[in-house]
Image 1 (cartoon, rainbow, N blue to C red):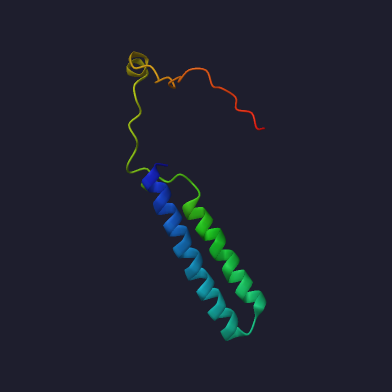
Image 2: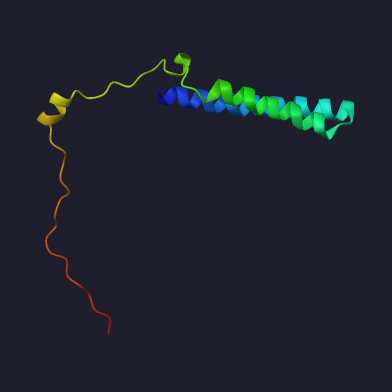
Length: 92
């Protein structure tokens, strides 16, 4: 899953959970059943998880291009600059 796919999955998850929460509340209120409300919301969480957790192909539409290992060897990592020995200060 690429970065854009993660963003889409997160937005889709939030939207679906809110929609299922509203539907569950309305169903529970109309039927007067807390158990029905919880069952509808639990079903919504399961459906949301099945849609947003697996790495579906539509979440990988913008794959990142990784640097070729041979190219990486040609350009070594930058080293941190040393500014000389550090002096300790004492408090008196």
